[in-house]
Image (cartoon, rainbow, N blue to C red):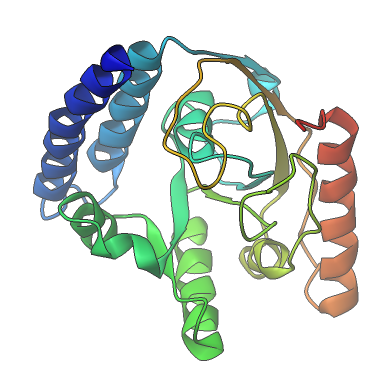
Length: 236
């Protein structure tokens, strides 16, 4: 228990340092390259401190020069550093508005290159989707968790359509990511961290061009769901 709290105390100044770094890059880094470097390094430190390893399969199948909409299952707070490490920091995160109220770190999210979505207001949520689509058209990939919230029982939940609407609007492929091993690390409702080996399987890109419209987006969603389901291991 003492060691756990010691590690937790270590992560507080580390998080503060990288949050300030990210904030300072915003006025000068229009591409977001150095802004994204901050969460990548922070994530690497998180895993090093926690004694966890991330194995990645399928990264070689991506064209790193083109943008994608990545979609992933969601089982733990550790999913965010996991996808950042797996994608080598080359991705913008679509995050919920509530996170901006976290001191310093939340400020970096609010003013940086990541994309905030206000789920309490459908009109603002759609405006966020439009901003994300514009960001993608300019060459930036994004990651979303289409389940909407973390699983509470370790099973894959149903997807929501927003991520697939975004891919259709931007005209870029959807790439399914399957994360296994994070559910038992820090389950929802606890601060206890249990080291684990995490695996990420990056699926084949699913074309989304000419997929606008409810039926086409639902078909895209179904394809991505099946690709993740195929690799997913129930983590009960």
